[in-house]
Length: 116
Image (cartoon, rainbow, N blue to C red; front, side, top):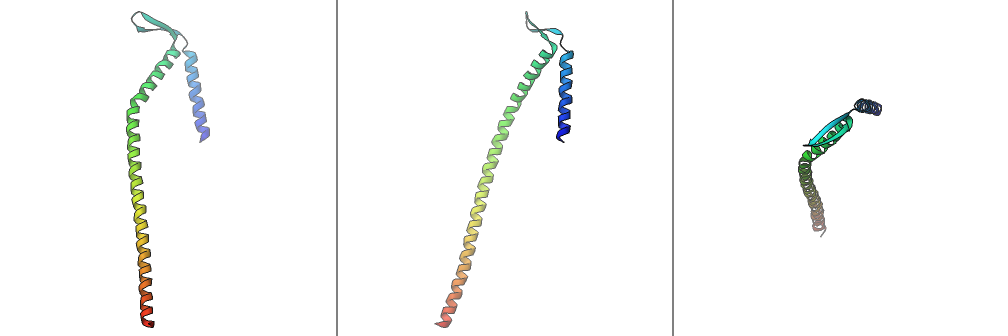
């Protein structure tokens, strides 16, 4: 499976390299009235790709924070439930042990009453 992923990565890299080599012509980019830059097309495409990726990350940042908050809330809830379950099991164990000890004690009293 790693070989397939490696091959896919190589093919994508070669395609991007071919795209970069074939788009080296200079273009004029007008970014403000009277302001312009002469850049190779591939550089301009790369700049806009990076800008789009940054905007995408910022757009998802709020959702990421909400999801992390929800995960933390659920983790606290799980911790509380686990603690309550452990206390319940501990209490039941103590009650069971007390019941067994109480039965043994009452049986000892019966034996003592019969001998005494």
